[in-house]
Image 1: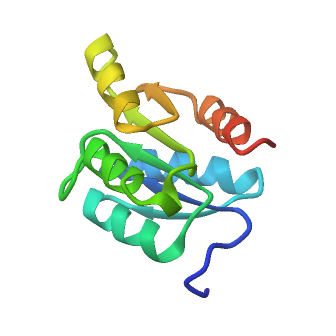
Image 2: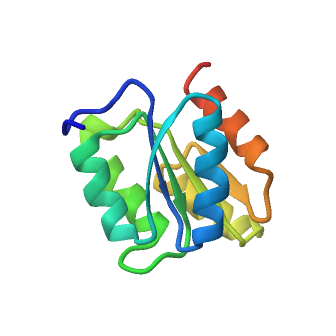
Amino acid sequence: MSDSATDQLILLADDSITTLMMVSARLQRIGYDVVTTTRGDDALALTLKRRPLLVVLDLEMPGMDGIEVTRTLREDPSFASMPIILLTSHSDDEHTKTGLAAGANAYIVKPFSPQDLATQVDQLLGR
């Protein structure tokens, strides 16, 4: 594949292989191409290189956490309007506020339904 985005590319970053497998399978079933990684620094590098339509980030990952990746992407004007969803096991208001203040469009608490995440992706992408 080329370095440019496909029409339907989503980047999914989570340190849980189980989460990556479940969510990527669900997104692929509804027509998205999915690239995955288990590290935050790799998520940032892949986003810069592949330019996905949307990024789903776990809050806690090795390399960089989801908040750091979100903030870094939001500092780049070319990613200012790209939807970002944060996934986390933290359900408290403080984590939610921090994630949204960093620039995330949505904050989904684990455990979650892959279908609910797919619905959120579709909504953020206007499908």
